[in-house]
Image 1 (tube, rainbow, N blue to C red):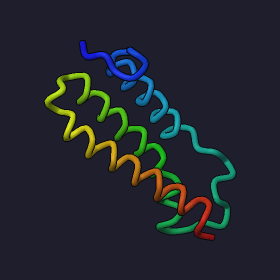
Image 2: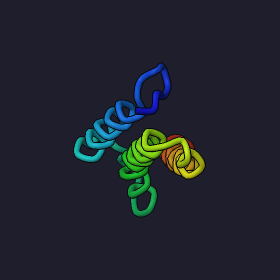
Image 3: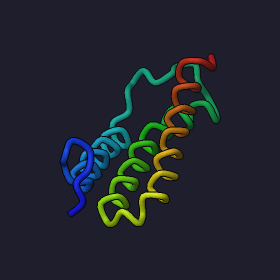
Image 4: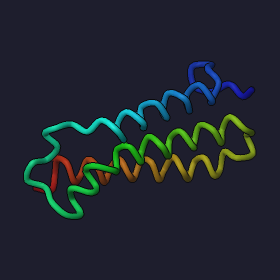
Length: 94
């Protein structure tokens, strides 16, 4: 088993990220951008859970083998971009 951040296995981090993703998938804050509609509402609703799912996949790939670190990096970047889009739609675009 490949050790990861804080000397915990990557699969532990994947499990934590997956739990957080499930929470944000099924629990939606009631006051989620009341004036948002259309594409903005879709991004605000789904980009945050998508970020956590992508991070979970990233951690799983890292846990399988160091050979997958290149792909894991790309998936982590996609997760970061997803979160950046979420933040832009939530706080900047009004």
